[in-house]
Image (cartoon, rainbow, N blue to C red; front, top):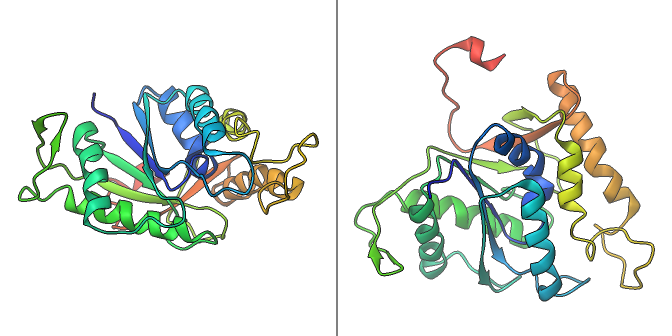
Length: 238
């Protein structure tokens, strides 16, 4: 199965928070989207890896993702080395995404920046034919996505492109809050975290509103780009 978009996140819930509405919109438009989690989020203060597994599956179903995989790298301790790059390369070559979405380049959680660089490096290396990979017993052909975009996370960043996601925020919120163990829950007796506050919960909506404001629509999601964005007409930017 070929994917139009592969969304990569260091932890389950990164993709939903960073680009959940964009994914929902593209799936609604008939695109095939897959999600790749690098870790199971086992170091998270709240919940457990087993709980996150179930929540991730539920969130993927809400968004309508065609596939969701987890490489089970060590949460907090994975590194950007050849072994990790090759595991991502195998996934990229299997699904041949046109676009890859991945973590913010610089963010509060150290895994976000690490995951961003790791995914970006793997996308480039995946296009080199002399790097040989075997997946499920088959030799894989080189494949490089046409574009890599980084979604915006905890830290505000100046976007290079903003996607109009008006009409898809509610679906994003349902996917995000499928992670019941992680976000605000008055019935939870687990420790408070920066993302379990009501302020963070509310910020998901008001940040989408602010991104939408920048482009004159109800809601938006912003991305930074690694390469120049090419169009064949200025009118396609309207």
